[in-house]
Image (cartoon, rainbow, N blue to C red; front, top):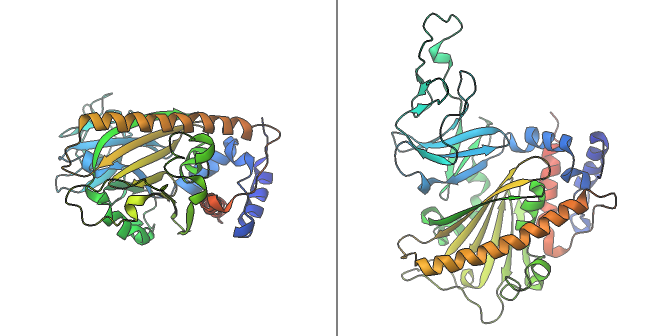
Length: 376
């Protein structure tokens, strides 16, 4: 196993952060295999970041909720009586049992399954059986903690930092692209949940570059989106962006009645990496989203959603085909990332030089280093 004491690893990371963008290497291998480094990431990367929970349209009615067991603990995004969405902790204020069903559901009230403490949809404690006479109990002090919540282009995000800059401001450069693709109104066609035997950064980085098409996806993606055509665009503090122009003769089909997608949109695969846990792949009228959650230092829980235009009929046979293609691509990536994780844990692992075709990985590395090394 590759062993790095945390102070030494942070020194390596500081050198990486100061490297010229034209002379960028991958992150030090210890960043992917150190338990101590993952603990630091939870404190300095995920705490205070806008973390994606899922799609707003998937919780349409009052009381509908979606759960997310992420690095900051179990939370739920729940539709309020006024139509807004609020993010609450799922941890009961009594003895920490989890409120709400895993994955999601719908309820008029939130009832703890352990001792039947009951909460309103906004997290306020409504009832606590048998607590009369308990001098340590004050009803007003036992509401479920709530987090800042923002919906961007149909995705629900939450942030544990009450003073964080609005997400919409940080993603403003992508507003026009999201609008052309109708991202806010796209509907979920299917969702795939997997666990990969790789650090979360291995999985995230893999989805933010298409330099690996010619190696990992020789028959699935490379014929349509050749590796050597990749174009990396300058990212910003909250995201990276690149595209893979389609091979001659390939073009996504324009949906009936669409007047927003450009011809360029129909002839390239565009990938937006939103730090730290969401990647969007724009493929003509469809968008695939990938949410990455650390599951220990060597595993990542991955949720993948396939979105399509509202009212397009959602042909069942086509969805079966699309799902089969996506599952094949995910299987290729899953195996590749597991191999990378094994390599990173070996004594021979070293930070390697990055190609201009994977400039997005260098940008992500600098983002991560800046967060981890920020003064506390």
